[in-house]
Every structure is written in structure tokens, then in C-alpha cells.
Length: 499
Ligand SMILES: *Cc1c(COP(=O)(O)O)cnc(C)c1O
Image (cartoon, rainbow, N blue to C red):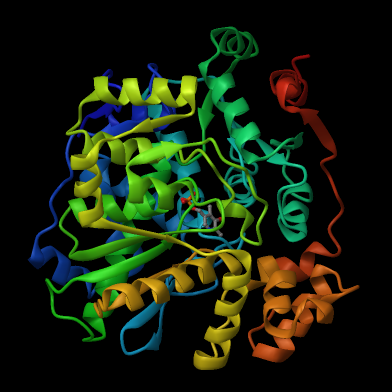
């Protein structure tokens, strides 16, 4: 399988796409085609373990990796010491037509682990295949969860380092503590005075800078990305959509070929794009429901066909979705534009220069055939957490609740009763303060820190506080650096020992 840039250029192998992260023309790598998965293959997935399912999917894309290489990487990534659920991505049933796929059983309690536990193995294998001997320096911009997941994934991996930028005022207390207490000799965490888009734009600028690349090379290092622009982040995410379907087949809740809807709490559009890729490979998907918080730039885009960043940025109770520029949308646009890289270049230039672009009515209609988009504000999200807990005794985090709420609205509007999987992207204990406030009122949490809120949630729900949260209390803070958004290059060079 070869990979192309969404902006028209490049033709590289899977390992080169993973190693480079971003294509040289600034585009994102996309596979030359979507390898079809037959009904027979789909049926056979039902009898497999998560790692076996992952192996079956990954090998269709990663053609320059051997099957033993893929299987060894999977065994390392999804071992019992990493994930606290043997199914890896367990499916819970809420009611007759509604399921929750829990993607938060990894070391950092968010779905980012699904990809970032595997990515370091894919990157080091890719380096070897391409005779890359320099240190691979991973740069990450995070809205909260990617950072910690990348740090855990790359911590003490030989031949790599991992530097994370996070918005100083834009992440939850637990998210921040998780990052700044990270151990390992090759990890760096730097707070940025700005929001997530500032951090992400800054990192993109570093990747695009020839001067910065040369300074890194002079230090014996080369840059790579662990953000969801990297195809190596995307492909592990395709797996769990197949796995959810296989679980439904196994439980006889579905006959092969019958459609399922997925609701995905969305920020950078990586998770839901993976669902679209699974659909393109033949997974029977009805609608893909794109759920946003008050930063509803995607809801507007799917409705009007116009993407516009001329809007206010809001801080919400679902901070990992507080994003105005959804990078991975570019890969969907590429499909919507019939893979016309020139058109993508035009739209991305308009986005950069004018802050908006329009895709036209025909393409908007095509998108509406596959996607439904909706949004929920903080108040609605809180109601949803309470409603699910009271109705179904199910405790969900703020991001998952945005999805659940949008599903409720979608069903009311459309009467579509297709079985639907809500993709749960984080443990409620990562956002314990806001989850508790939803259940018992904001006053009830006054004066309580994140740990006290977690204890109270445990008492209410019977769901145990994960040890990763308990531990945070005792761990020393190891990272103190902060920078202005325009000082990020200097901060990286300093952290990596160059200046
Ligand atoms: C990253 C994240 C999201 C958004 O996922 P994208 O792939 O960026 O759309 C949603 N919820 C949580 C908890 C996350 O960490």
C-alpha cells in the first residue's frame, strides 16, 4: 500500500508515512485505497481476540511491516499490564438499541491510549526500515489527553524523546497533574500561554520550518509527530470500530451486514475519521454522528458546507474537544473532493488566509449522506450525565455525555432506531469535578479537589477510582517549564539540550 498527500504530492510506503508524520507539502498522508473487508472476514472477526482483530486490519495497510512485527507490537501495546479490561475496548449495553464502547481502559484513562500505546512500536520499526539512525524527537500539541498518552507511550523508548505542549489554562487539573508528574529520562512537558489552537499552530509551524529542522539535525535528531495527523495514530483507531461490530455479532445482537451507527465526541476529527475509514473498508455503518461541544465549528460545517474559524473560542467542561481547527477534517475533504489534491490546497490556503472555505452544495449533500452533526453545551452535557446515571446506572464522562446528548437529539429528529454505539473517550474520573457537579449540583463540589470529587463519585456509583488517579496525589511534579506561543522553538531546543 502506498500513501499520498492530501495536497497532491508524495508517494511513500506506510513506514515512511509514519516516520514523516506530515507530508513535505504540508498535507496529510492518506492510503492509496481502502482495503476491502468481506462479509466472511467480518464474520471471522467475531471469534477473535482484540489483538487478532487488530492484526487482521493493520496488515492490510502496513504492507512493509511483517506479520510477526505487527503481532509483537500489538502484544506489547495491549498487554494486561497496560489495559485493565481483557477485552481492551469493552462494549456495554445501555438499552435495546444503545451501546457504549469504552476506550478508556489504558494507562492514561482516555481513548488516545488505543493509538499511542502502539505508535512508538510502529515508529521505531519504521525508523529501522528506513535506516534512520538519528533520535526521533516527538513533538505533541495537546488539548489534554494526547499529551499524557504520548508521554506514557514514548517514556524511556530507546532512540526517541517526547516533548508535549499544553495550554496552561486549558486542561483539567487531573490532566495537568498526569502530564507534569510523568517520569522517564526522555520526556518534556511545557505549558503554553494560550489555547490549544495556539499550541497546535505552533507545533505545525515547527514542523514546517526548514531552519528548525536543520537545528535539530545538527543535534542528531529528527522530528516526528504523535498527533492524529500521523497515519500511525489513525490506523489503530480503525480497529476498534471493527471490534465493536464483531462484539455485536458475537453476542447475536446483529446479523452480518446489518448497519450500526456510531456517535463520536469530536475535536480534531481523528476518531470519527477512523470510523469513516472503517466504513470505507466495508464495515456496515449507517450514520456517523459527529458530536461537538459549544465549539461547534464542525456542526456548522456539516450543516452549511462552510468551515469558518471566525468565532469565539469557549472553554468547556469537555476540554479535549475545545478546538476550532480540526486537522483531520482535511482527510475527509480529500475524499469529498474525489481525491483532488489541488482543490484541498485551495481550501487550506483560504482557511489560512481568510479563516474559512466552502465546499459547495453538492459536496455538502454527499457529506450529509454519511454524517450527522450536532452539539451540546455544558448545561445539556451535565443533564445528560445525570439522565444516563439515573436511567441506566451508567456513569459517563463529560466528553462521552456530549455524544450521548447529541444521539438523543438525533433520534428525536430522525426517528432512526438503528442500533447505535456511543464511543466513550474518557473515564469519568478524569473529569471527576464536572461529573460530580452534574449529579449533585455545583454547590456540592465547592471546596473539594479532584481527588475528593473522585471519592464521592465512587461512593455514589460503585465504580472504583482507577489507581492512576489515586497515585497522582503522591507523585512529585517533575516538569515546570512554560513559554509564550511564539517561544516554542526555543523551548524545544532548550528542553532537548541544544540551547
Ligand atoms: C481527544 C479527545 C476527543 C476528541 O477526539 P478527536 O480524535 O480529536 O476528534 C474526545 N474526547 C476525549 C476524552 C479526548 O481525549
